[in-house]
View 1: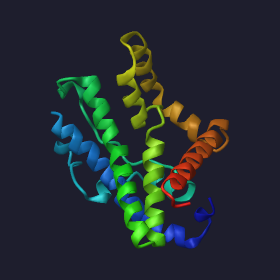
View 2: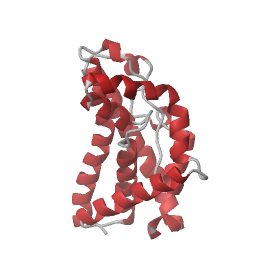
View 3: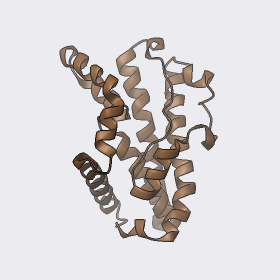
View 4: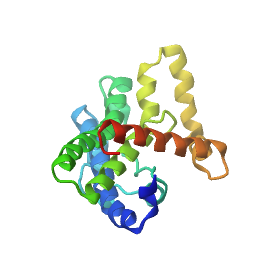
Length: 199
């Protein structure tokens, strides 16, 4: 996308990232608290302070490459009445918050178009879409787990101990999967922008 190749993108992407990632992580903490786990609240993550949620590497990648992540919100799923389901709902809350922002800002953009709003929409699409990829430790992995039968779920959960390696496999520049990840996210964003009438 040409939008990533100009200075104005970087100027607007930074505040957009701070807002989008803060709301994303706050949504995780809020959902976990509402569902019965107060771990995030106890550790000060139920806040709209962006400095509490930003992961430096994930933030840098999101600004430069168009996909990235924030600092994970801690949860203890054993505090949930229904651990697997409520963990999935908590995980889904982050991307859902981003897509709600996309819809709201797209409506505003139709009336008052601005480059900042467009960047903010793309950042939210990137953050929400990337986190739905079903690899650990992304939100999509927890969401898919809740949809699997018990026999397969055990294997799926076991992948979490390899999370750093799986994650790097999809992100390291020399990995063929990194190119796939980038193309996938860019393609999905483009499709969504077209669907919203913004491309």
